[in-house]
Length: 387
Ligand SMILES: [Fe+2]
Ligand SMILES: [Fe+2]
Ligand SMILES: [Fe+2]
Image (cartoon, rainbow, N blue to C red):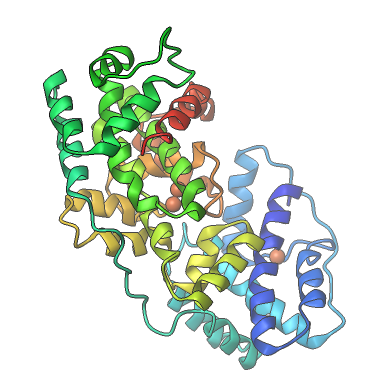
């Protein structure tokens, strides 16, 4: 199969294999090297899943080549890679055959692989489903900002009364209004001039972003915050352009879609470290989620915000934003596409899921997805200043 696709697959297998080896106290380097190279000599996928995957790739005009298969000299190394590989394949085929992490593990256990390696894979997962940590209380000011965002015909005094209730709001509006993109001739120091300069609609978005910002307080989460503002901006544009969802709700859904990633950072130190190792090595957050949390960060995030009192459709948007095939929610599909456009590489790329998203938004071509995306980036980096 073509080079980038294969390399990404090998990276995911290697990340899982290394984590298994670590638990079995087997030296990591030979496992990692063999896993990364396991396709140098040939494709290793089998069965119906392979046929469907190859078919999708052919439809995308992806070149498919075959090569001989490797055989690691060390049987222990081989058995670790086999188990890691089986788990990765389970994840890779989940758009076709939805299965939970524990179902994939059960299937692997039944396949007769080395029991010690299977047990080591199991032990990567937290023993009980992780309790969603308490994040900074869902700020009441965010509720007010959301109400403002949803309201048509917002007036200047609506904005002013909200801004008066929160210092951070005022400074966010001023910093955005004074940003280079809006190039004021003289520095803007009043809320009135700030709103007049950037417009009521942008001001509303700045306020919602400023209200959500405290959730991303730690410096480690700065990248996630910028990603969230980008997904929010893309989601709003898609909703408006396609008329399939409310743009204001799409913006909010984009802003909090990865709340599960944020919550994962608050789990126990060993859990977080294992998650970082797998996510970094695999360059794929969802693989780490499934191995460590037993579910993806969408499902985990839905549990976090489930008791915030937010609308249930927002909860299910968050829950299914990486599994759009399992829901009727158009917003989940829209956020799935916004993730793809933002190139966040959180999940294993899936042609079938992209098609589901594009059908829901009545999109005919891939190029349609990326129209105006450079403008999204500029707007998003501006909103990231908020707070
Ligand atoms: Fe493979
Ligand atoms: Fe994301
Ligand atoms: Fe995500």
